[in-house]
Length: 250
Image 1 (cartoon, rainbow, N blue to C red):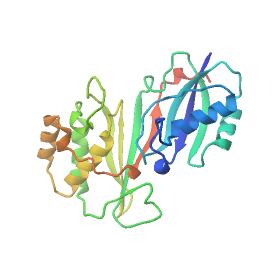
Image 2: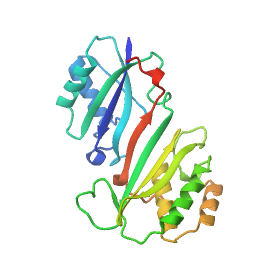
Image 3: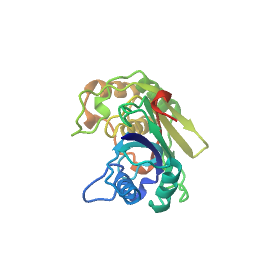
Image 4: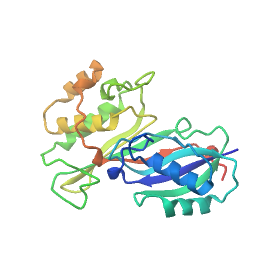
């Protein structure tokens, strides 16, 4: 039995999310069906990171096991031929036997894009937020997030985790032009709804709805009802998942 990692991208607009679901169309569900069609055996992939309905991805990884001998390049080509046009396989690679798409990951990088001037060409990948923002205050909020470990206030309810500790290695806002900006955050793990919570709360700070002192109080409260999760899914993209090189066999 050989283990493989699939590196894929997808536009999340028309999916109920990454994770397979019984009564809804998902990226993982479409991928599992395509693998079964091509390999003629039941394949159950394991995801590295769950993404919600409407969230996009440049690089996400799933692993699966198979005892069938096949060309990874050919399988990539075949999958792209049968998969939905909103899903693309970058490559398939053999990995060591105990490699796990989720637990072997060192970090994940997310992007959240906003635009403050109406633009129909980017509306499916960016959150339209037509308000004046103080980006210096938002950068200060990012520095607070970098110094934080317990993100319980930024985790939505009804999530099964043993703790809320996350370690961020980068967190910043990038202003691309007068109307388009991007939030970049990298961490060893992320909680349910966390990135959208960081963004939504940062936007409240940028609009002077809350202060940096309020942000410290929100974090200390460990109460998700005090954070803001209103940032729409369309603006969020999983950029990449990083692994140690020794995970890959070729």
